Length: 217
Image 1: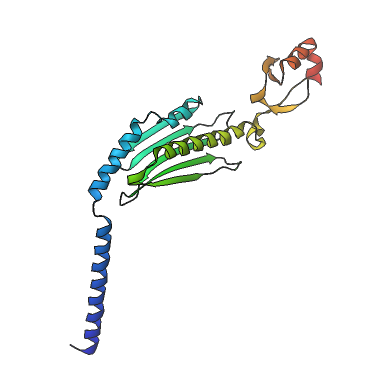
Image 2: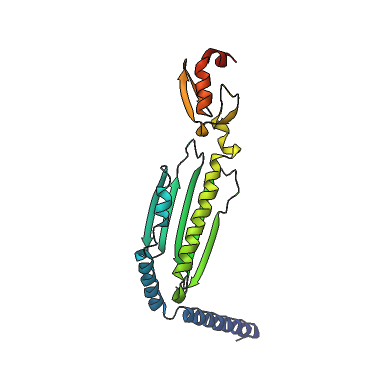
């Protein structure tokens, strides 16, 4: 064997040793995996049986245009609420909650994600909280989820008043001459083929005293 061949062989031997050491180290990280997996399944069962579970269902129930989808599999728990585009809330929004373990089933992460289109207001698209699998604080996890949902509702309801979202809903009260979003109208009626919106019931009553005068104006 030439000197070059010997040097090549030495490098290859060193590479095999590094690979073997790396494989051994990785394998040690997964020792007891089956036991930890069983612990994860048991923890999922406790969460799903907890009387506090169902936050997304309550969120979806608060809005007529929301739809809840849920999935529970070996990868964890996934729940999604879809909010369709409406005149009152002119954006397509998805809220997702995920509970997933890490690859070694040593930690559990709860994540909260929001997607909004179009996005004219500031909002937090992602947040998460993690616990060791053998020490999951369910009280803290449920409290965190509740707070995230309330935070989302506070953000989502801004669509009702944000000018960027309500621009297409702007109408004019024929009596007051005031521009406002029709979702805030106290009354509306059709007059000679046109739909009129009134900010207050009183302005509608005034309109009825002399409709032609206000329409002409």
